[in-house]
Length: 193
Length: 147
Image 1 (spheres, helix red, strand yellow):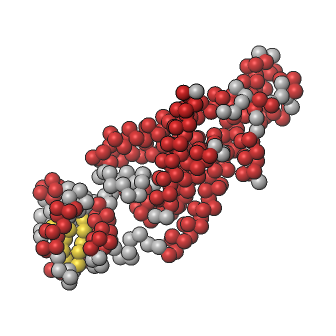
Image 2: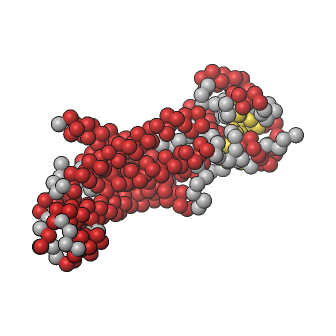
């Protein structure tokens, strides 16, 4: 009903607005409050009309905005229900905490998803550099270090970076490596010695 | 005449960008939720998920509405509002030194820190475009006739 009203208004022709003397009292309330003031004050007719139209255009824009938000709700609810139920962008357990990764001992292959400059400033001992900027160049070095029985743990700067998730996803999708995790907290979580 | 052509082109570009941006994220809500989370602006996980599911559809519908000129004014207000919020979020993330990707389009790998001027220019350009369309439409309607 709300949507129909918004559509009807969007099709209306504002040139058909009544002249000043024909304005119903209710219109003063619907349009901007200044309209009624202008009319009561005996302001210029065209100025009052103009203000009336401004008020009506603003009111129309807000109605349409509401209709747009309401319309978007329907597909959003459907897609949300489907996605949250059946799809998972990150596999369960993709993120691991440091203590868990350390408990895997030598089986872990650390992958540093940060930039080369940051890697050279400091990284987890034994980590290999693999980031999306130099993916093709760095991939061979990764495969030199990787074995099928290894558990890959990718990390980037900290909790607010997503390079590790991107690299983990590419390792799974491009190279079909299943045992890939992301270090929760990233490099920031690694104890400095 | 030239002004009408420019406004039409602007309408199609802005509508197209929003249709594309919404479409690529609409079925990747969890990826988009993570992008929103990385901005560290929204503190409630439930709200992040709701935004990740809802926002792409608003973007897409607003894009279609602008291209098709249905709910046109409302769609332009929505687009201008969203661009304002996106620009503020982008600037805030850059100012805090966050090394995250923009999240504007799903496949985008642009780091905010590395590409801030370009991303800001793009967002401001879209915001300015939406404001121009809004002002043009408002002016025409105020005079009492639609384009």
